[in-house]
Image (cartoon, rainbow, N blue to C red; front, side, top):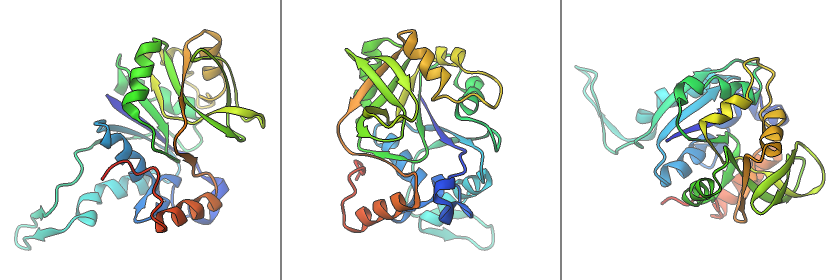
Length: 255
């Protein structure tokens, strides 16, 4: 099963860092944010990734091209140029898909349709950390039988708010200030979701597509009550790195 990660945003609310780096490469402890997200999926056996690139996507490409030798000890044969790694890198397959600099989230996802085919897939943002149990999320999605499942987080926030009845979304509103379940990302999506997405670059996944899925009774909500945070501002970066320094890595479910 493929894991699609939205990595194309400009991260303007943390411009202190994103002038030089795309948000997914912002450091959390010793590794970039995207690595922590991928390790969560890897922990649950999901190793086939599609990264939807936009702003400074070349930096993300460079990170993964150089990942093996930069992050592992190795022996170099200077005659042949052969490198033998001392430690095995993660068994990941990564497709890096350029989706445009100004493209909105729904349009980025739409561009992955050919890669996904008729399969169910997972989707998340390249700026969220959680200790969510992805096996339980998948099980819930299968039980509900809806086209889409979104993870709901109990939090007062500026993020999209979900009205839920018996595990199904009755409505979806983006960026309200009211208290309730918010869109925490960590989606499971059937291929029919592509019917709700437009080809033009202005399709915002969190607007008409999710609203229409809720209206059609096709958006189930998996409530996660554990750790979750979005790394949206420079302050968030400082906070999450302070947690790392103190050993409070609540999102780190892997060894």
